[in-house]
Each structure stands twice: as C-alpha cells, then as structure tokens.
Length: 68
Image (cartoon, rainbow, N blue to C red; front, side, top):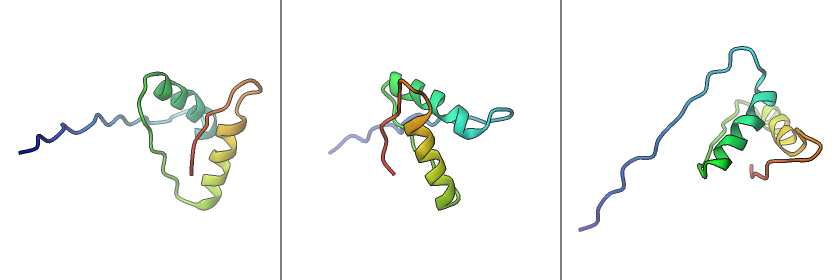
C-alpha cells in the first residue's frame, strides 16, 4: 500500500500598488531562494510575452531562468 504525500503549500500574493512586471521578479527570487516552485498564469498571450521578457531583463546583472 502506497502512502500519499500531503498536498503542498499554496501561497497567494495580492498586488495593490506595484505592477506585476515589477513585483514578479522579486517574488520569484524569494521562491527560488527557498527552493520552492511557482506557477504563474496569465490571461493572454501578450501578457505572457511581456512577463517572459520582464523575467529575462528585469536587472542588468541578473535574470530568472524560466520556461513558458
């Protein structure tokens, strides 16, 4: 008989003042630093493309490797 793993923790973040393209890199850096995984969903292909670019180019000396 196999034992089921307990479900993972789910964390939500509500943005009030900072635009997503500015907040997402910082949030995902924290996620990666803690060894967690993240899923980011977008409503449109254009939004996906914009966030993809933001994650590769948000800082001159850093980027967040990711897949889409």
